[in-house]
Length: 406
Image (cartoon, rainbow, N blue to C red):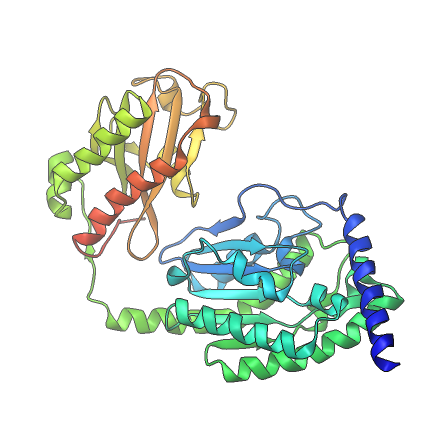
């Protein structure tokens, strides 16, 4: 009888979970690329994985949700930049999390934050199965990340504090969540670079029906307090084992800049020529930041003169983790006042991808542009990224470097 009762209860809970999902269509949620950036040198790279607060429900941008809140909070504590990416499924279960890791560059991460369990608690996932899946996930992350990369597994939020689960059935799920938590703590103790993070009462408070930007800010600050010291230690150990990098001083002309980098000019020119031809643009340019100036290192086709870095198109590209594509600068409120739209070489179409130093600081860009506007929706951002990485790899192959900044 007990077995039959359990099966009936499991069926009821799973039917309730499906019903809750159907009523969630109108909940505000973030749009746009699942990532956030806080500027600074030697950026920490963090991946938020899972569901629950990771999904950002209640706000409409990832900058207002947990990625942006955590990035800013980490930078405030470490003095470094922060790149926070997100792999989330609001309706996912623990056994499905490895699927979210497909395509993620785990070898470059400095930390992983895992939110999972609310759906498993409602579904009444068997405790033994949960423990096996948690161990499998943490061991896989440990095997494919850096030796100093920690995985932070956040406590399952009490189910009835989640507004959509606040019901009598939520009390049943809450009891099961506690049992899953015991298993989670046990697995984390057995995995050297896994950290179990119990939530505090302050982080459980939700201002309204859904989390708002202030709620995510509180959670970001809480996580940053937990993570900052380990990230600092990892950077200290890395710095102690590194040869002092060469500081670039590229105040001279184009040929001098290439010589000082030790770059094979023919390889850079080849990448730029390929970009110019592939995208059918009048120009392709490789630029870097030098102090407060923008330095044109090499170009294929007409280029603009070296100018101030602040407010430049390349500076805007360097703020982004991916491609920036603008079909018509004249028609864009954000870019219409930029000087290249009103003076030589009269840029209308523009696309750029950031160039990084080995430490992860974005210090330049590969840009392609044309005096004629075009539809940017079909632009091949993947190819632009590949060409930018060709140039970036050439820089990295010739030794550590960093740009001088104010």
